[in-house]
Image (cartoon, helix red, strand yellow):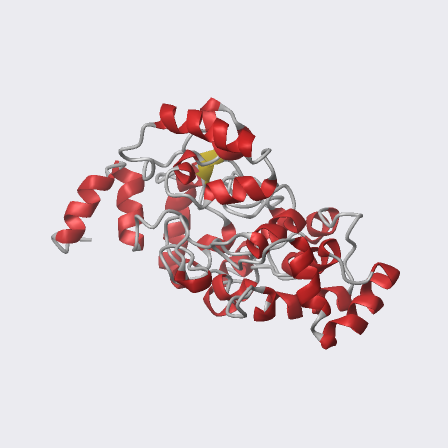
Amino acid sequence: MPVGIPADLWRKLIPASNPMTTEKVALGQQLYFDKGLSLDGTMSCATCHDPATGYADRHAVAIGMEGKLGMRNAPTILNAIFQPVQFWDGRAHSLEEQAKQPLLNPSEMGMKDQDAVVARVNSLPEYSSRFRRVFGAEGITFDTIVKAIAAFERSQLSGNAPFDHFLAGNQNAITETQKQGWRLFHGKAQCIGCHAFKSSSPFFTDFQFHNTGIAARNKNLDQLTGRMSQEATSSKESNQGLSSLAHSEDFSELGRYLASKQRKDVSHQAHNSKRSWLMNRIVTFLAANRCLETELQTKEHRNTGDILRIKERVKERKL
């Protein structure tokens, strides 16, 4: 277990319905990197959640099959086991549920339905014996496919950084300038107000949903919530129906409301403040909805809340 990650909490969050084994994690890893799980064989989970870029990517928004653009940038899977819900709007309550949706979404991996995914995996000879060893008589099913992927995702942790060793007592692990930054972070600057951190939950997040003021511009939200209710009813409010709505230009701006149906959640999204983002931010995009591109822009927004002024200053080459 990496320094900085509470091992007891990690073990506690492994569901009894999907226990971890070394062979299951290895099977999940193979599936995670396999482009054969997409309709045209061009996309894998790792296409958008790439280990070379902190299990996220460098694009402003996710790019799916045939170059289709998503509405948000791809979040990292690092430390995803510790999140109570998944996706920016929290519409999935487990990593298993999360793993299902990209496989079937036409904007992502594009498979027609669950049966098509199972048929594709069954057609690949390398999987038959491995699934029997891991899942026994249950073999290859849609549920066992996503269980294996989720097991691999639960094994991906971000820790062992110099900052972790500093907190563990090594005063020489970070520089004096970094120590000064840490004092500002949890002191005068009060970054820690949203980027919550404590030894029992060292993830730089409060795991809540926030309206950060950089989305839903020029949108009639009352009209959107009414339309969304009709769309959700027509799709029987299935998880896949919510996934489609989350990938539409208008409805994605409703944020957490898509899943909760609570008016207070309109335009709220999971705050991009997780440990895995803060500690790997150099290799991924800085705002969920592509508005902020540099750390200086992000800090300016946190200080002023004025996204329009930030855009003006970017044009003036001052940020």
